[in-house]
Image (cartoon, rainbow, N blue to C red; front, side, top):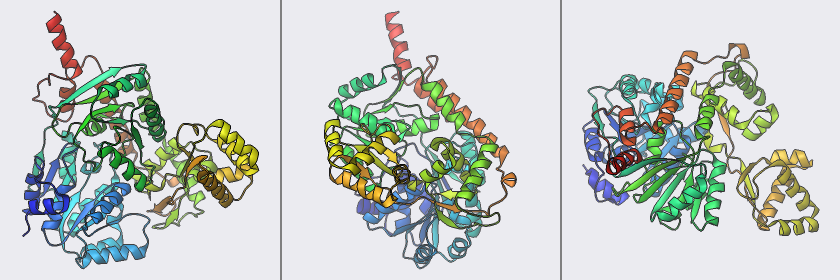
Length: 574
């Protein structure tokens, strides 16, 4: 058998494994059930990708994020590793082809979204496959205690019954003791080998800095720092605005969020990895699978919803073992904004029923129809037609989807974007010279804010209705403005798709598992309260707080976070 180290060197070019990677891989090759709890940056994906290439058969990888599956498959194919992915919205012909390739030994890694596990075609084909391993990525999604519970993950237990004796590797970066126990029970892990890294990162310095002047303070931090940095924000629009602002201060930066196409994301990421760009301003879409060891600073401009998310994002600093800083720059309104965001992410059942009904009206489906059908779903058109606010309806759709009613391909909820690139005088001269330029640019400026400073999501259909033009004419004229250099216009290259997992029921019969829903809401609020508590000045040690949160109770103060340093200074001064 080819050794794991040989595979690692041949395909990834690494000389050796990271701590605990080899232990996990050895146990997987011995066909043991393994639960691996590795912190961010621990290289979890290699723990199933390497064994897949060392053994006969196909490794089935269950992942909750379609966009992440697509990214991983694209990167593996660049390495000439035979792999594929199956997710909602694919054509029957493509699914047939991919499953046949896996059945006849032409695929080494088959990525599957959890919703696909219970389909008849998958169940029939998987029984005939030579499966060597089941890998469950983001395994905390199976736990109601977890920060991203997905009911569809419960189908994994049924897959184990179809494939008795096949080893299972469950991986997660953030699991409390309650989550760990539920993963073991729900995945029916037998004689499980638990490989757990400590949540301690001795080279990381955790700081919480209360500042009203967030941006000037962040500018000073970056100018003092010699290495690469990440700034995390929670909104896509802020990525571009903050990145542009840093550029005006002479700090090379790029913006990264899930609404960008893969080519743009790769270009920005590569520029940062190769140190052509010092700072990357990103949403939480950034970081998975990114291997840059010399990040000296991770700054949070916005508060994450919980310690799990914070630890994962902050942990992208200092992977080379050298000193690095994880800094939250918090302003007085930050906590209030976080509370409002978390509470608004749990709309009541009346609102959920209204959104559920609206979806089926939009798709023109009668009661009793629609099961297992996939439709194009124009998200901007949907919110415009029914008068919803995009953030609120997105939360409702997410809850309904998590309850198993339908699946939405989030990677397509991007829409087109535009930004004005020229100055006001040049734009005015072009408006005078061309009536269509005049009408279209004025419609853009009346309909959307922020066009002068950042990429803004636009709706071609909305502009067409406002101007009383054909939508194709709007697209053509926007492309012309782009060619002239007056705007940057990025047309959406993919269609939103929604796959219905059940037939439509009357609105009054629609329900979700309220006990589970309220449990998740309670836990979300508890995680939020823990995040707020972490910010407090009464915290003895920031690192101790994080380690205790994840169940490491025998801990000592780190000695170098802001709280520990303040105590040392008091002792010296006293």
